[in-house]
Picture 1 (cartoon, helix red, strand yellow):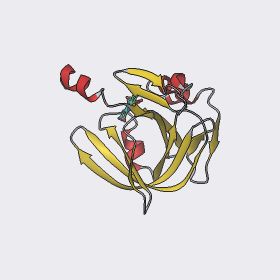
Picture 2 (tube, protein in one colour; picture 1 turned 120 degrees about the vertical axis):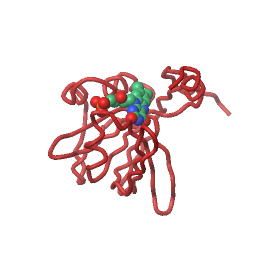
Picture 3 (tube, helix red, strand yellow; picture 1 turned 90 degrees about the vertical axis):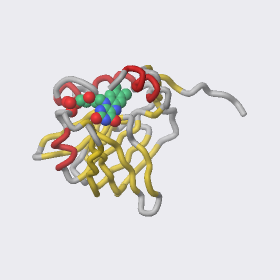
Length: 158
Ligand SMILES: Cc1cc2nc3c(=O)[nH]c(=O)nc-3n(C[C@H](O)[C@H](O)[C@H](O)COP(=O)(O)O)c2cc1C
């Protein structure tokens, strides 16, 4: 992909999440900013995974995934879950196992535990459509990502 195209895409600011799944008794997790809401009724979301990611089989063949939206002070977690072994990714992270068997980050800003509904092939990525089974949120600020940099919202009084 050309640098120009990447640069253009990176102008679109997003939040940052860590998605987790469990596949064959192993916990998987990776950083993801392609998360989006699709439908409110029923509650459906999506994100896309690179087809040659090591985690690809786990996320496309697992029963579902849990999206953990990161807070403004969790930049280190975003980097931790973007590289390294699974042990390194989950090391020192405060987590809780949901009834689905998947892991939720306890300090997440919001979380969505989803069953996997459909996998749509889209070029070098697969789109993972999920139906939200359980969710939660807290009153904190989100971590943002744009132009290859992490950031946070400037607070302003209205
Ligand atoms: C901010 C950020 C957002 C990312 N979003 C995605 C994404 O939406 N989909 C994806 O496949 N990889 C995404 N990545 C890259 C993966 O996190 C990284 O390639 C992944 O951890 C590779 O793991 P694996 O190949 O071991 O599965 C993102 C990385 C960062 C730093």
